[in-house]
Image 1 (spheres, one colour):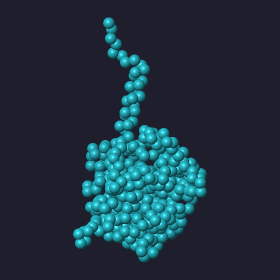
Image 2 (cartoon, one colour; image 1 turned 180 degrees about the vertical axis):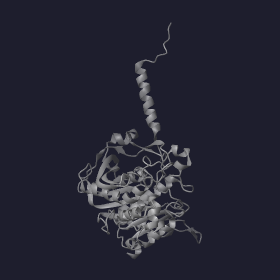
Image 3 (cartoon, one colour; image 1 turned 90 degrees about the vertical axis):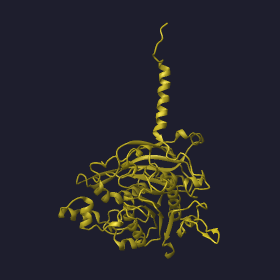
Image 4 (cartoon, one colour; image 1 turned 90 degrees about the horizontal axis):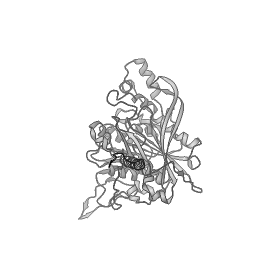
Length: 446
């Protein structure tokens, strides 16, 4: 009797398909394996809403082109391409809702180029939802240096689930994939300084003025902006905070000591509202959130222009931020003339906005340092960000007065014992589960 070691073709096909499915499942890492119980989660977070958000979420990847832009890398005028991840309220079948395997994933790479894939809570290329007599405001998300468009995907999904069209930008020259953080870590920094606000404004212009898959459902008059780190640097400018680079800071951050080049660079950089010569804030911007915004520690924003900002602002910062500097962020908040708020995470550094670190980031400190917070759990930070960002957008973009109540806070989130009884918890936070934060607001002055 001859025994063959060859596996029949049919079985081979089944095994190959099974291995492919296993590999795909393994590739799409679940960064939020267990949801916070509703009784300990912030009320407006995804966990706090506990399936009570308004819509299933669809997602598309879109490429847009900003024509005739000055390219720092080639020193020429050329077209600037941007890749967007766009989340939106979607029509999804009951079968899809029950079958979580139909959800998509997001592929990225770390700063050292290690690839990873994250499981999503959205459906790739799903049909956009059309509601009678209702439109969805735009929210633009802007990452830091370096980063990628899905580094805050939890916010994109959460806002879309609550009735927004959310566009997160891959800022060209400023992504993990484009910058060699070992050999040339600042190769894209001049481009970042120049283009961050311009990219934000152009994305809004495209979504509200051009014809595309979501144009029929977009609110053309109301929008919000969120930027993290260098995205926050851009966001402050986009809503009216003019840059004031001097010779010293221009040389420092562009890497040139040529006096003529420094003057030319200053002329390019020192603009207001996304590249304009003076303040002409787009009236569609109704709210802005700046998370750990860079630049104020170097006095890069003209104080008078900050005082003249009329777009409501929420600043979010760690009081130990050693990248953007907490004192600079606090100073920017204090100078901002519009209704503004400052949420402080105590004992937090700079990484208060990204999703939790993927497994591959734990292989080295450079990659892990893009996500890790030593004293805070990233999932808790994400949940709190979801809560306050949604409150901010619902209050100021959708004009929902009831949501504004979640922004009417003061002082420390830590409950104190007074005569043997705990003081009330912050609105939207369960008793005992809101610690380590503080809140400032100038909104009472407006």
